[in-house]
Amino acid sequence: MITLIFISELTGKFLQARVDTNSPAYHVSLFIQHICFGLLFYYLIPLTNKLRAFILILGFTLALTAILTGLFYQGLFTFPSISASLLSVFVSVCSIYLFYSMIKSPVNTPLLKQAWFWFASGSLFFYSITFFVLGYFKLLLESPSPVPDWCYDLLHFANFVLYGCYLTTIILAAKSKLPTHEPR
Image 1: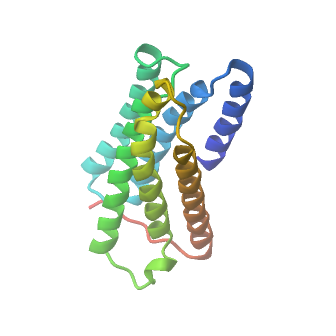
Image 2: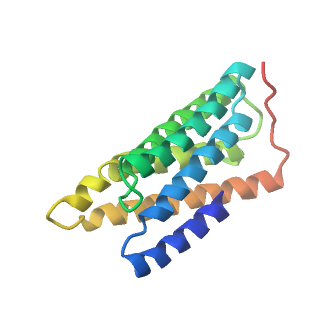
């Protein structure tokens, strides 16, 4: 997923230079992220088979919603603030539930050495911030005054925190045998 988002960001830079907007790249990126996060949380959260299926179906439904919203409501050349908001809510709620499942099924490994803690922390931090910033981004872009610099600064900071947490997740996951959660 990180590789796909990196490619999407490069595509966005290319589009910005060519057609003066990077929004089409974000439409595709959000589609991919809905599916990837649906799959990730499907495998990470210890749920019953019905709840696991619900998360997976919700991820795919949100992906379809992202495409349909981009095609028929916001347009491909408009920033997909609705899809970004839906992704933020989806990932934030799933991250909170991942924390909850960690509390319900404690392990002997210290919290700061648990990969899932870093994954949920980074995801919750980033997507909580982006819910508000990107949710209003379309309105900010369409307002007569320019988008405040602090919006971009906040998003850049949140990205550094997110990728720092994801890097920590990858390092910890590579070092240890991660607990797997079987459906109840």
